[in-house]
Length: 268
Image (tube, rainbow, N blue to C red):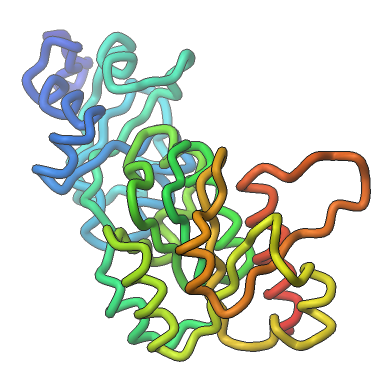
């Protein structure tokens, strides 16, 4: 193990701490330990704003000193390039990775805040899409995001990166049963709108009719299959995004952004 001139050790990929953190690249150890990895200065910076979230930080010496100052009493481990590469699943590691505590909350806790706008991902499998929906929901002022059914693990490294720090800004809920989730949302007084390319009402009509003015939960489906009919049928309305050009459809994250911003605009 190398060390810096002031005596601080520089960990290698063979270090026990690095090997233990590396295991968090897999879903099972993340779930078992309630921990995940946040890579890159943006994610680490936002994680450090959440009290008690960051357990330790690994960083290349001489980089990200501003984050070290922000970390305060959080353990800061110097590590070499090989160690950071071992902790990263990107082609070009950014030189800093934080071990963070899981942040998801129960659905009842989110509903207890009387949210006005919620995004629900049902069976969303692509981590980039899941993270981007979280980012869009945050930008649109949503109160939280729910991932339900067999959706991707929100703590997947790609999902964390795609959220661009928004994972640390708003509550995220993980619920197994999509139908029960919709029932809970409706029971809490939210109007559930299913984003569905075959919907009976388009988004412009929904805005004109005042459907977007209410407390709303948007329901988004799988990237390839969309929402199954039985789940979409539980929503109060099925809304399609109008296609004015020749594109066949919009991808999930883009459709989510359009729907969430339309509701945010109606609320304002």
